[in-house]
Length: 408
Image (cartoon, rainbow, N blue to C red; front, top):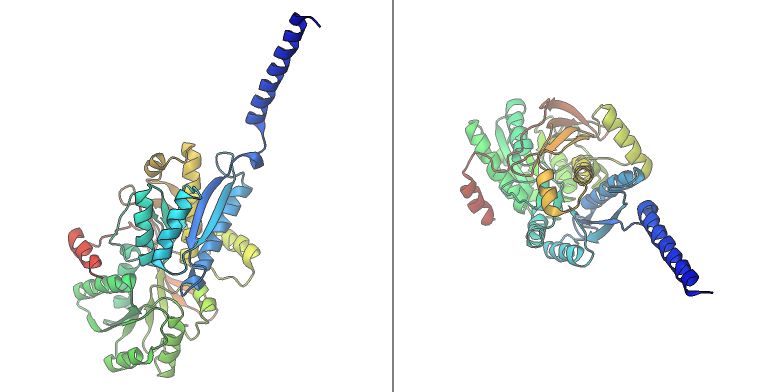
């Protein structure tokens, strides 16, 4: 073989190889492309696990639905689930591990405000993103957090005003002993004072505690017309049982709940609540075609008896808000995402939601529901349109609120 012929064969082989490589890069199957890693950080163990496992399922469900629709940027989303163990310190450690070792591009998670505040420091340090799906006390903003849960303007304040107008003017406040109930009670007291109502008692119960009888006795002695309940977790079952044992029924003294949604009926075996009330953005009983389709698909995956509550719905649509933004800008770069997420809209099961362009909280429709005997809520009031999220209620200055929350 002469040199010219040999050189021609070598050049041909190289050309074919380059062409094959280019064609493979352009047309290789999605499955062979590097997936987009996201973190899911919730308590799988500890006192908050019963609540947070439902949010893990809701987040995974959204990811599964998006992946069935070809993912984003031509790639599948790969979720990495981490256990915060109901401990803020563990939440911070796991957030750092997810970002630095697992290389996730976003974290979906947290329930308690103490866990969120721990993760806030981490995502701000590494300029990552956290989507936070739970109702909370407000009094916070961060360019690294998208708050899909309700701040005070979307739950605590409208729920208290409605209770004053429809249930009575003498309030007894009872909550778990941590940030959210203490801050919520401060806001409630300001609202009730402006309405010329009366706070006749205020008590706190440690998370997970069964020592509820002393508080019930104080409620009986105070004789309120409405109980505002910010208790979290299984303490609610013991508290409600003790109320009923002492003759306090919803007909006699109704409760307005700010932390109990549909899954809690099953998680904590809550009974005797028919006639009580709750304030949320989402109820499973919403009769729109979008919500009915959502409930049907969710129950097909997780069982016909699965109950769906507000934090689950917000966890679900948070994934979609993030995914459609990534698809829209064709990038997962954080700074681009932070800008593009402003005013981002999504037709969620509860209705259209969109992210406020100033404070990273979510506009949403607000509803007040009455507990029915079938462990669902019948909507008795709704805002008709999305309500502006206001993390710092204009009952104090922003600096006064920050000073207050830092002392809790």
